[in-house]
Length: 545
Image 1 (cartoon, rainbow, N blue to C red):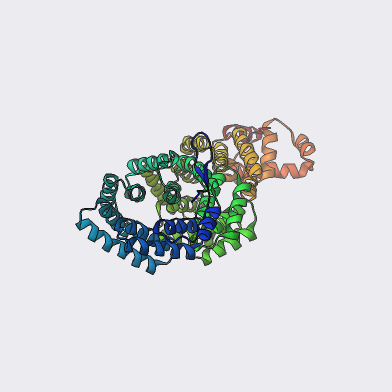
Image 2: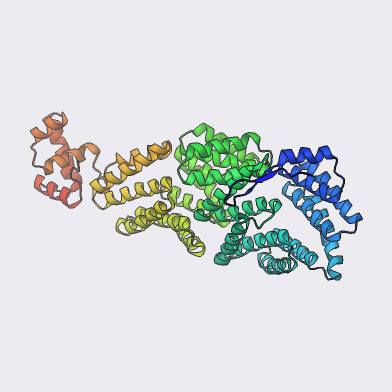
């Protein structure tokens, strides 16, 4: 039977396969052999035709078993169980995996290494699902070794994938990510079968994003996109692939394209686990863009599917002035002990809302926990995020001299990651720090840089917050209770201007200016204009234009 595939690039790119054409060919030929039925099931799986996939692989299993090809029957049964499990049919998936285990037990007694490897893989997956991470690591190591010895490439890929995930969860980040890199390079080199490439890509990239390893996620997402593009008619991995791509695009500041990709997923995706994530990510982009109603509706839809919608919803509530609701929602989500990646985002949001009129001790505790996470995982993104939250807390504690170097370090991290949005948020904090240190000119330069970036991104909610901050009275003036107009008068006093000059400059009456001068001296507890001038110099309140 002719195959419908061709090398997509002369330099050894992914093999291009037309799965729709292959499926039609196999159906038209009326395949009845075990190998033909197995291939038909694979084509149906790639096309997202799960009922036809189940029928074909079940028939292939029966044919292999009848022919006494037990190893092939085990492989086929494993794929049926895997496909059903991924599709949410947990009861049927468990029944098939139990069948796999029984077949493996019988073959292992005959000394079949591949069967022993498959059995170990199933045991490792069971341990992982039950939350026994240490067991998943130990059994996964054995499964990987057995699969390699047996030359069972697909089983070795699954074992490596599971082992890497378990190692990262157990805190062995260096080895876990090294195994992921090794696996990704094997796929890129064509050393991994097309049936296992998709699951491997998705699992590895999901693990990278969960630990905010943006560098790895970006690199492997690029390769995943190429692989998906080469699989014509592909449906089964398109949703996850698109969400990964949108996440990377969003971090790079390509919000319009990220929103387009996510909107496409929400219109065609049927699997709840994928759809809920697309809805959440799209709602978060809408929140940043100031589309409050669309964001609120998106978060509600994601929540209806079971997705935790914090901290996105909390940030939306903060943006709309409902700080108490934001604080309660984020605290509640943290109490549910989410995965490290989501926990880090929640902790950062908790620092934001608690330093914005909440409990500073809660913010400091969240900052410390985030710092511990960042140091344990060690990715650039989490380190920069922890630096930003530390700077936020120090600024709230009125220690700008300590906040400044930490925020500078955070800014360098965002620049290295080419993350404009987080970089702009950090520059707003640097502006506030410069203002607190009395350098209004530096503050305005930072505000201007952040304003340019946020305006380019269309981050309307953050732009509005920036403008409120940029227009506010400097910290020293605010602490003394001076209004914006009183600050203007004080600055003109410091230039040596008389009341008449000030009145002409500000289009006020001399009587009004005299009242402002009297109020300024009273608030600053000073007795003369010269003392007020000295105060303005000492506290960095002079005109910076």
